[in-house]
Image (cartoon, rainbow, N blue to C red; front, side):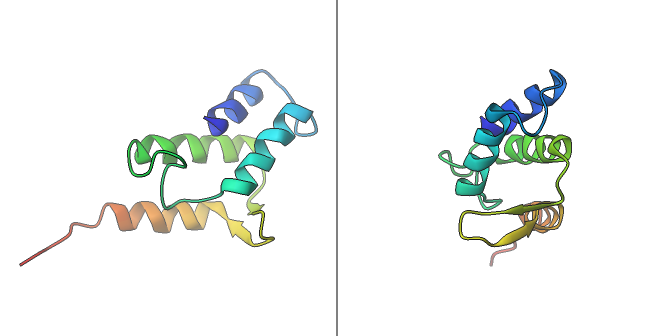
Length: 92
């Protein structure tokens, strides 16, 4: 998982400008979503949210600009998404 890679790089004191970190961030820009775990769907989505948040916190940028040049305040979009996932669904 790319987010876990960024987190590992931060633990190893690899800096933002390092080509490995930038390659991972470029992947995130290409695949940015909080709707699912990219490539897996809803499977392990809460683990994805946890690593997503830890990695982006370690990266240190509050806004991620995706491949379509749309800015995302990742904390806000993650909070909205995780709250909507935990809302009980009532049927009947």
